[in-house]
Length: 96
Image 1 (spheres, helix red, strand yellow):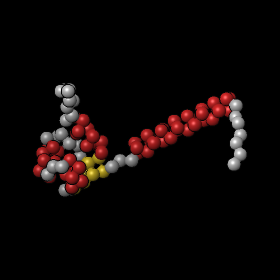
Image 2: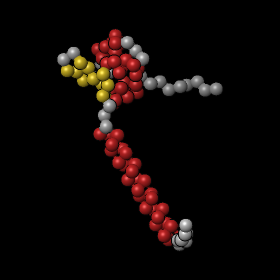
Image 3: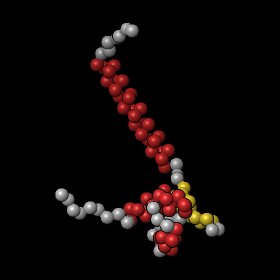
Image 4: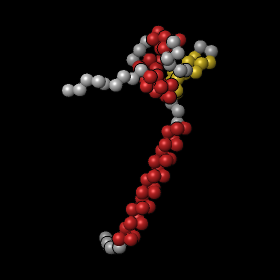
């Protein structure tokens, strides 16, 4: 194996190229997360939240949990769940 020394200018160019690539990867990752939407069924929501159908129905009827409906089938997007959880989030106030 042979080694080659590089000067500081080439090293800085290499570091800059790596930083640019990292930023491009981050941007692509953000875009893929935006277009990748997870869709949940009632049974998946029940398991995810650890509640029964009756409570999910109450959240829907009370307008607390957004949903999509076709006939008697309900679907929930990840953003629906995130919004529901964020509206029902309370910050901790007691510290040790």
